Image (cartoon, rainbow, N blue to C red; front, side):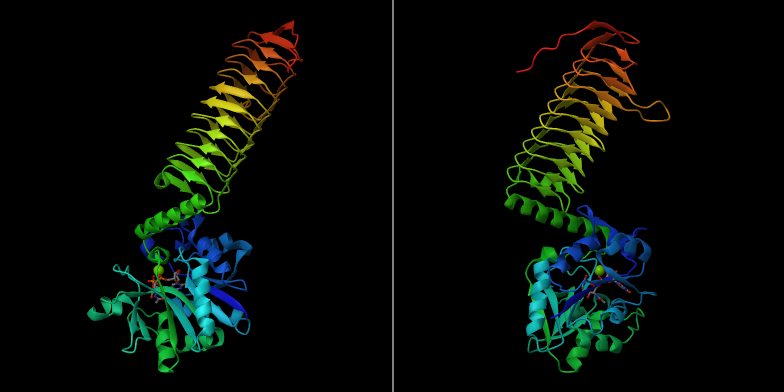
Length: 453
Ligand code: UD1
Ligand code: MG
């Protein structure tokens, strides 16, 4: 059986009051529409079709190869939107899920339940409903005396009695494909708004004496639809709680989930502990047994096992195992800290590799540099990597000792075992095992290196 989905994403989203198309507004770090496509993946056998219209260019660009799109122009309502998918899907699907891109909390298993219900339904469609005290502007489910579904009535056309109805149209349907394409053509333009409402297909089925199945859903938090930024913040809170719960059930500790912010798609290994006020964004992947936070922001970063990261900001970085950092450390794009690196307070590293066991305890800037294993970077060291026009590299060997407040004027190479005196301004390469001091620094002595181990 071929099962596909049509995702409606062409509406203007007027109530968001935004220049950004509604479906691209982020929820836990990913556009709303991403969440819906992820959930749909679990229920379909054929790739979904997204109906785009308002902001089509931006939405299509974001989707890239992840979904097929059709254009709805002009946007004449949800029924009219669904109709646009017919040319791509007619004859290519048995069942079609239709849902809205502003319902990002619906789960894959919920769509699957809807599909299963429709598989067994002799009638042409099944739809998802929920019972709630706050109607949030949703369509009301009108049932006949025998309990079967009769119609969906939109809020602004509902009579006062209908407005009291607590069963709401969530906005997820599963149709027999061939029936859907014909029924869509029978929808009449709503006289008040001049739009074609997808919800009117329910009455069309009922008129033809075909049974409509309702799947009553018990998790209201899944059915938060987003029409305003207030709804967006409510959805964010619900999604965040769901993400945190999943990590905790997978073995991640959080002392305060309410102040722990993790984007969708982030991976975290077991026995890692997240302390309060920690933000983990983007494509970040974190291993096992790390202690992170409090007060830490991590974006697009890969972290190994057994690291300690306290009150720091990391972006586009790689940390291997047992790295110890902070408080108040900052890693920028291209920072690569190998195992057992220690980075203390007020350090910044960008586009640089710090090999095993490098120590930089206090107040340093390292940019465009490679630092050999077990080298010690003294307090206040700066790689002067920028001459006002270009960036230049600094290469520091193994077992080097950089004295406090050294300026390393790049391009520059320091050999293994070299040393600089406090306050040195190093403008020329330093051979291995050589001590340089002063401004500009000059060599004063050849050194004998202590054998390690
Ligand atoms: C819709 C339902 C309502 C349901 C609610 C659940 C209709 C008529 N009403 O109302 O019963 O309770 O969702 O969230 O379907 N769209 C298009 N083209 C258009 C118009 C809309 O693609 O011409 C898309 C929008 O981008 C949006 C979705 O359809 O993703 C729903 O549109 P929206 O205006 O948000 O409908 P609701 O008022 O929420
Ligand atoms: Mg809506």
